[in-house]
Amino acid sequence: MHVVAICNWKEESAELVQTLAGALGITVYEARPRMFGNGPAVVASFADPQPALELAGKLKQSGFATLIFDAAAVRSSAGYFIVRRFEFKKGSISIESSDGQQTETPYDEVDLLLPCTSIVGVSEQKTVTERKLSIGKTILYGGLPMTKKVERQEAVTSEERTKVLYLYAGKRSPVIFSQIGMTFDGLGNAMKLSRELNFTHLISELQRLCTGAVYDDLLLSHMGQIRLLGPGLNSETNLNLAVEVLALCLRQRGAKGAGSISNP
Image 1 (cartoon, one colour):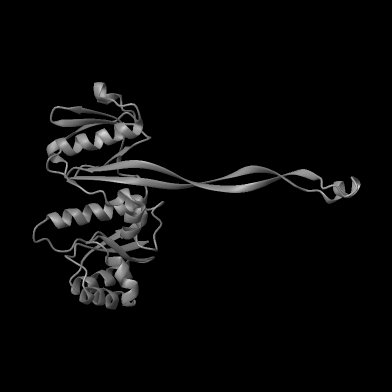
Image 2 (tube, helix red, strand yellow):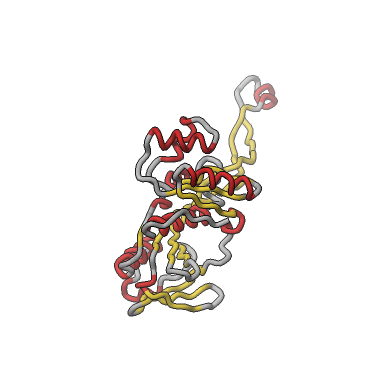
C-alpha cells in the first residue's frame, strides 16, 4: 500500500481546504478534518505506486509539501535499533539490543525525540456463570420458581497501552525505547520505583541532554494518531508509519527553503 501525506501548512483556510478537496476529488466537508492542526496528515492510500505519484504531483502543484511511503516497508520494526538496556554516559547514551548489539549515540547528534503510545487491542474468551429460571424444576416443585446454573463463553475486549520513544540521530538507524521491553538498571541511583516513572525520567533526561533535538508528542494520544493517519489507517498496526511520516515532516520543516520530500 502506497500512502500519500501532506505536511507543514501555516494555517487552515477556506481556500486551502478547497484546494485540497479539489486535488483529492472529495468534498470540502471531507477535506476539512484532514487539515486540523498544522500537519502532517495522511490524505490517501493506493495499492499501486503510480496513482500515489500522480496525486503527490497534483498536490505539489497546488502548493502542498508531499510525502509518499510504501506502508508495508515501514510497518515492521526492521531497520530499527530496539533497546533492551541503556546507560547515560558523558557525551553519549550507550544502548544495547536484545541480541547483544551495542552502540553509543552522541547527544549532539540526536535531532528528534518522538514519544508515542502503542495501543493494542486484546480479545479473550471468558467463561461467564449465571443463574436462569428452570421451567422443569419450577413445575417439579409445584410452581415455586427454581433456577439452574448456566455457563456461557463471552468475548472480552480490552486495550494494552505502552509508552514508546523513537530517537532519531542523523543517518543512524532510528532507536526505539519501550516502557515494557527494557531494563532500567542503567539509571543507577536515579532508578525509580516503577517502569512508568523510569520511562518518564528517561525522556526528561534525553530532552535535557540532547539540546539540539526537536521534541514532538503528537503521537502520545490516540486522537493525535488518528489525526495523522486519517480514517483509513489503523493506528494499532501503523504506528511505525505514523512516526516515519511525523519524523520526515519535522525534518522537512527544519530544513529552511527545502522543497517537497518524496520517498516512493
